[in-house]
Length: 217
Length: 219
Image (cartoon, rainbow over all chains, first blue to last red; front, side):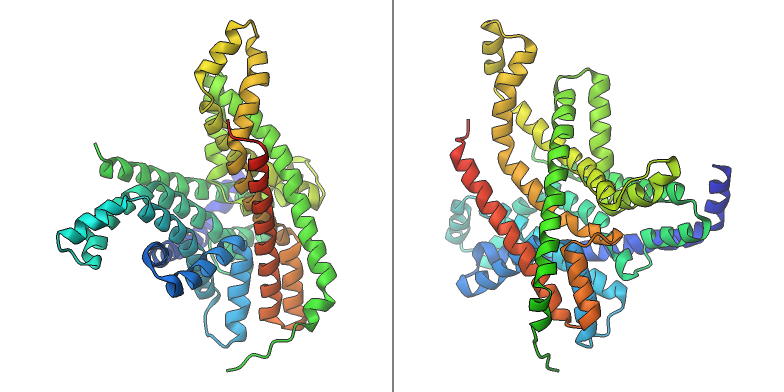
């Protein structure tokens, strides 16, 4: 234990760097994925067939494919086509696509759960479709989606560990580097696991607070 | 720029790919079976147990669900030998996935267990069944039926999670696809093949589960 603490002190900046990379990559993927998911959800719920069909294919293919396959495919395929992405770039790209497909399906469900009469009521008041969407439908859908959105955020943080496999210097890869030098395998893996656990616990706590804040009382 | 498709290398490796797929399915199946046993025990402990048991069950679920599966897999394979626990690759992966599955299935079973109407439990007790008999003969079957849809989607996501076995060089589908990619540089074909196999297998499992749900009518 003393040796572990001493080594931990030695590598503190290396692990901190990994931690920051994990947070950055996850946050980027969640933000981009949420934007994709929002548009995909709206398209799936209200689009006509030429819009719906490709979106459906996107959502189903991505949701049926393991994240690791998406990450490896993005990493190798983008490179083969001469897209100059870093490993981090293709990792964020893959995670965003994954996040967007999941959230798209969730947004669709939430939008379709709102009674159609509300759209009709909005029309009869003379609102345009964009206004109905922005003022009537989205506020309700977003509130309903919040718990699942928090879950997805946790999943993304967990999935970001897979980026270590393509060489993104996030927390898990940094941990593995440290282990390669110190041979304190159990200690450092458990430490990394604990950090992930705490990040996700924090997300859940913030999520629960937000749920209470936006709850209908 | 143009990319010329050439699926020859995929057909040449079709056996490996399908074998990898079968290995992944087998890993998921064993893991979900062990995980279901864990989930059943922990779910009953969480619903019927004393506050101490409840807290223990909740701790297990929270801890596992918030820890990345890859970390669990790496700990089981690379770190547990430090404690004298040595497992083969396949064994350690199945154990990791089963522990992971157990936490998710606990949540699934717990929710369905709470959904069993209290009236049925009372009815069972009033005709002279013991608490254990009520749990085994009344609550368990109804709970399992109600849990079926969520059980199915958990299995599908576990099947996809078997791709992580590639990280410890277990030759399942993702590992095989990556090997084709690295050996032949048929990048798009390799990942297309893997994706098609994963997606179609998930669809087949989902269709099978829907049929199963029709065979056993919902309570």
